Length: 216
Ligand SMILES: [Zn+2]
Image (cartoon, rainbow, N blue to C red; front, side):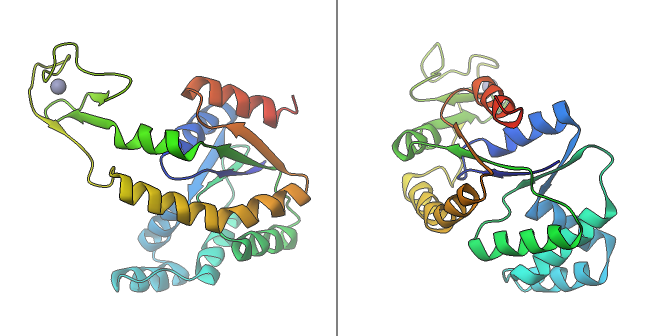
């Protein structure tokens, strides 16, 4: 089975991919994982990609697609692959279709984790964690029981991720919508798109994905 997971940054795609990986013996492939593995393996394409990344440039589509082809040809020990973060654009989706067709393979399904932008902004910008033990908190959902004191370790130091600010989150959401909306239409036309509510809790989202994949 070959599966694509679509969703904006912060929607919990990685978490859902990890659950599917475990339950269905699929191998999760993110562009980052593939690039790192190819660079480490020192294949020709990997060396090329490594040079480009060292210069701080974006690895071009045809190179990423070549690396994905190499990875698919190497096979998986399980039942197939979950692509996480790829394709991101219509051109990449079309290239992926061509690549699979050449190999006599088919994309089985595309799961879109649909989110409410305002709620996602709130979810991301409200989170913070203990600077000492790493325990996670949220301004709306989980404040420390004693204000300013970590429930788990008693530390009074809290930290926020630098990227968890409203401006960054909104920029990323905008980029996601601009790039991904055409993809959603593309896969809808192919009859492969399954949309689940990405704002539900982790377990519910997982169950919705499982139902979508099993044709329920
Ligand atoms: Zn703590």
